Length: 224
Image (cartoon, rainbow, N blue to C red; front, side):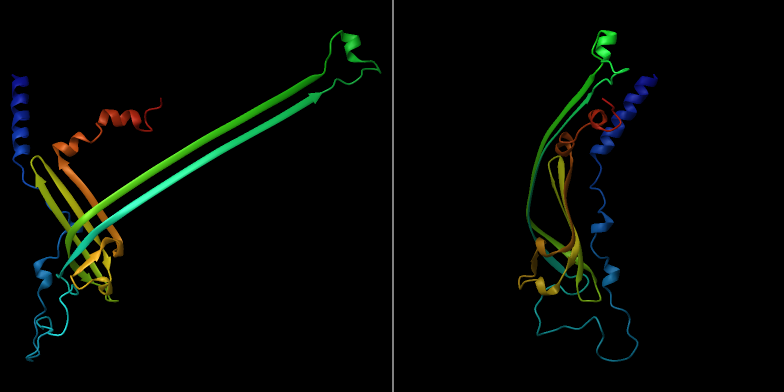
């Protein structure tokens, strides 16, 4: 009876997992809240109200909180490292037995008491590592803050769900308004303090992950 109850509970959890909605957005990459876009109430009685102005002689590139900016992902990072080490050490020690009462010890004891010690150590090591990463595409982000020097703090997230898996592209960083082109876009290589994440979840992503049992044998805890 207990076993049957556990099976029913497990099946219920599996059904609930399959019906779950998309996870909530990461606050670190969430767009600016609508309440933050409202200009403060003005009580000066003037016709001009700050925050409601419309500039007729400027382009439409992002420059205010809440504006949208397109970031062109153009990441191509390659790293290569090679190390060679060759070390050798040789030592030799020879000790001759001293004379006893002016006589050679080999005559008194019938054997040669001199000793010789020699050691030879050689070590040779070689290591090489190659890594290449590439990420291309576009992602639109929003301006969440304007720094005192005029730079824009941006962040955004793109989520694409296909079949049984979801792909996430998250980006945050600081851009200079002067680097934004006329098409209101900027290269990811010009984003300062950039955080670019490309992750996924679902059955396909889980199949590419190592299980906890295999991780145990590759961890420092396993001594062999």
